[in-house]
Image (cartoon, rainbow, N blue to C red; front, top):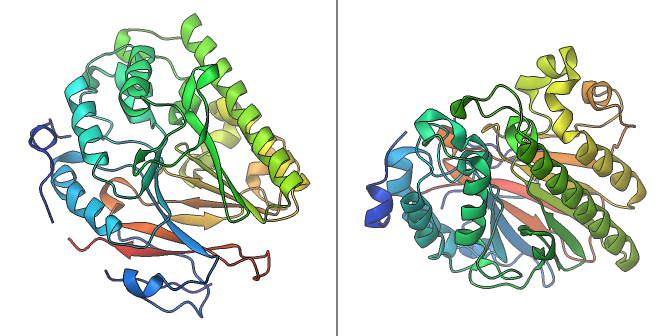
Amino acid sequence: MSRTFVGAGLALTAALAAAPASASPAQHTPAAHAAASPAQHASVGQDAFTFAVIGDVPYGAAARAAFPGQIQQMNEDDLRFVAHVGDIKDGSSECSDAYFAAVRSALDTFEHPLVYTPGDNEWVDCHRTNNGAYDPLERLATVREVFFPVPGKTLGATMPVRSQAALGLPENVAFRHNRVAFAVVNVQGSNNSLQPWTGRGLSEPTTAQLAEVEHRTAAVVEQLRTTFAEARQRHDRAVVVLTQADMFDPSQLAAAQADPAAVSGFRAIVAALAEEANRFDGPVYLVNGDSHAYAADAPLAAGSPWLGVYGTPAADDLRRVTVDGAANATGYLRFTVAPNAAGTDDVLEWEAVPFAS
């Protein structure tokens, strides 16, 4: 696969611009996929479509000021929807109601459907002193109230989705376009929220914390199982899973090999992904943020060191894409879904689109 870079203002709302502060993108496309402007890219095939993914943005005052212009640029692209894979703030700034409201106002300017899954910076890590020493579970409840007020509908231009609101997780959603099944699930960094809330003076996970992790993990596994079962029944061409946590962060591999408990919060989810990917007759794409650096790999392919960490069988058809974030969030990944007439080996192609400013 070759690398292709695609070229393509506004200030954020006053509240967001006033909120407290705290490498270039890569992409993976076939060599034949030439660079194109958003307008040119619209003609991708009668039943093909495109969508964009961003994550770990906006981080800091400069990013907050640039965010409205970046949204406008995505509005001008020919996209079926945009996905934000979590972390709407950096990890060293306050998790305030005012900040959440300001980001929500910015996200409301999306003219495409916006599918958002929470990141750890807006709830899991809010126990930190410089985040306000909040109760993370209270912040999670607030995130759900602010960003998921109408279960079953996206932000931005409304698109119907099936949610797990009945289980208390309106952020977990599923939908389908042109025989591609999408599952968006709340999986978090900090070992899926198992790390102690040291900012609140705790050295061990609390009973309520453990209960939340258990309930949310079970719901995520259920969402994955249901999505794959329906995809097999409908003979879908591919499954795409979007989430915040990088469960295969290369910078954490050595630590995970030395102590597999460091990723214990992901184990049931990875096991479900591996099993379902092996049962599904087509490619499976896991798209995540969290680690801030673009990557595209097959994390559970035969010979991968992650197989030993998680104790799963090889899943060669699972492909992982990490989107750039934080200081690297200089563009968005535009995914193109091939038309139905295409083969099943490469249902998705993707390329980085740099922000204009």
